[in-house]
Image 1 (spheres, rainbow, N blue to C red):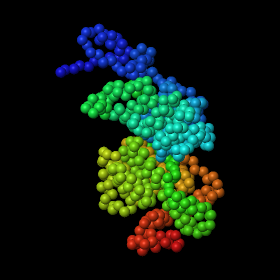
Image 2: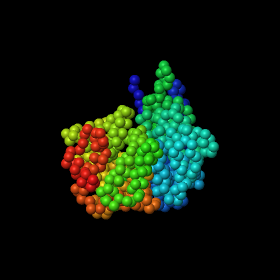
Image 3: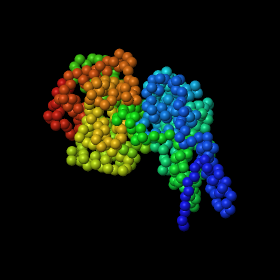
Image 4: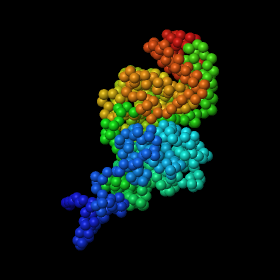
Length: 571
């Protein structure tokens, strides 16, 4: 059977339907009501495809924010305002959806309090982002929900997770939020989940709904429906109508199957006209730095009592400032460093799993302590996620095979790497994201680690995420790294300054105790450093973390290495 297709302009739609209706025995399937609603201005000829989005007046928003918006980010804010603050911002990962969302929400500040719902691992990152980008918001008016009994409306800016929201249904009924930000909104794709059922009542009554997702499921339209319903429920009030048109719905003996797709070009046009804005990195590459660094503030709330006590004791021991011997001071600092690793494990794993759920298929995770590396690979293995691991125990002969496996696989894969053992000599540029699960006091080593992906052959800009936990050694390592990075930039040895060009958290020494510990880190790991001193320090840290050196172990370091470490600490 031969078929033919003809193309008609949208403004001719009415005349076309009238002409076809006058022909006898012709079956006509009109466009869905939602499509006609979206393109009504084009049907009537009052708007053209080239109509520009008007420039929004952002004079009421903190200038420190608006001045730093890239042109495409400013366009995103304009688009949102033109849609009355109801949109799906579906920019590619790494294009600054967070800062755009904060600016959009700030435009409607008179309608606050604001609610931000995000994956659990980035709640505190959102709090830091508001402190950084909107200095006019008092820090004590930012309310991060950490347990189900917390007050959902306890601040001007309220931040919770999807899972916590599902436990707070009684509080939701009290008073609605007018402005909502739903980060990683594809978490709502399944309408049968507790997440969606908890969010729906809030979405129904909110005036402004800002959905953020770097992975809109265009190839599986059924997963988009819940987000369309959240932003513009009048488009397709009934899922079956949407499924019939765009999911190639089929009636099977056991019910309807909506797993397919159809009319995707029409769906894309309709979404872009009505509620969705999506830019790819390739489209705005000229506006982006080659490397973008971002601080992700994580919490240590999930640590057990023993680890919490050990971390606190290590900090108090350092705060006494009674270490006259610099080597003894280093030993105390390494204890603090090790307890920080234990305290961060739960948050690290949560962040990695969130990245995978958000659609990040390939990325690198750098850590130092064996305990952290083991915990990450254990979690990935239990969830059936492919990974490679390179650390100090990986034979040189196997490294290239592991790198090739990562480089050429089409599946999701995580490269779990030791900061000190895999920071040079390997190429993994098939990924464009690097996650530092732990910090290291030598920024040169961290830059080398970043450059496993940022090198010749990389066709995209690279995102670098640093996981930083307050109340740990990170409080003192991070400012030190920022300062060192700034010095490297001034002499042309670093492409960007962590403190200025990253979405960075601010870690200031609030009291004499913090200042004293920071000074100890500075003195211990910066003064009088040479290559040999650095090498010995790395050996010392690795030895400290090696279970084989614990009492009762049958395995010990070689005599020469053990002697070097003991000499280093002056034992």
